[in-house]
Length: 434
Image (spheres, rainbow, N blue to C red):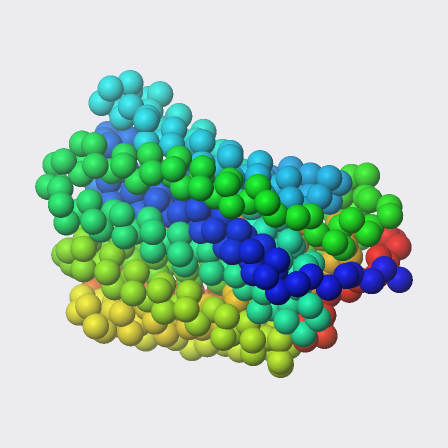
């Protein structure tokens, strides 16, 4: 049996901060695109489409980032299982940052024609590739350094990254919207948040340069030669179940943060600053409560919280769309808040729960592939499906509520089929493959 040495709290805090900062920066890059897709990319890159068609096309390129994420998790998971968790953090941050800056430099359709949306598609794919590798490396470094009984708490730091990245991205867009006219924002203002990604990535690389390798990785004697092949052969059922289980989290998050922005500004006539403020306030509360939910996972078991969060989503989706349809900021905020509280009850503990299901020699690949396949199922499709469904019926998008409830019930079934792991425990032995 291999015993993982204890890591001093100050070192663990530095490590958690580096993981949180890097994850926040990479998700900033990803979310800047999502916000721009909802607000301006349709007319700029798909001007020959109708307004609805342009939004759908922009969300289509948004979805390509999700399709790239499982491939990124395979490539970077291979690196993480063969060479260590630390190199993944550096390589993924460089790739995502470079692709994001390049989007900000891209000529529009009016300048280079069809080459513009095609290049946008390629850069979005590269963004997704980098983000697909980020999660596995960041989560495993904190998880495998953390003491027993506090695994969920420490591994929740990277899980706060998406909230921080979202607030950074949308705060910048909100600030630009308040200071620029619509014409200025559409002309050049939308590029500034993409350019800012370069500065953020540089800061993230500086933070991550001092991170030490996972002690558990260093004590693995026999690394998997082809981690993906072993995951597919031994853990294929686990990968499919975790992907299905996590789909609801992505569906809820992106229905609140991406689809609702487009729906409320285009269909309900709510101003862009009001919508961004509502959504940002919700995500701030969600991020602040992430460690609390993780502590509950350490105490009561991570799967229990996942099941509770799924059930909460299933019960709240119809009230959420009804509150959104009012167009009233306070009511929309309450609708979003209920959805995000259910979401974080589940997602705060997945960083500890998901890797625990896989043996250490293939953990970086297995956990990341399952996590990012869930992103394809829940995140890539949701803005497109929701935008389409909202086009039918009256003012209240009941079809969207039904779709999200159905996703929640499927995920609930998948979690029910997964095993519980000991609260806060990570296996320190390396089972033989087979």
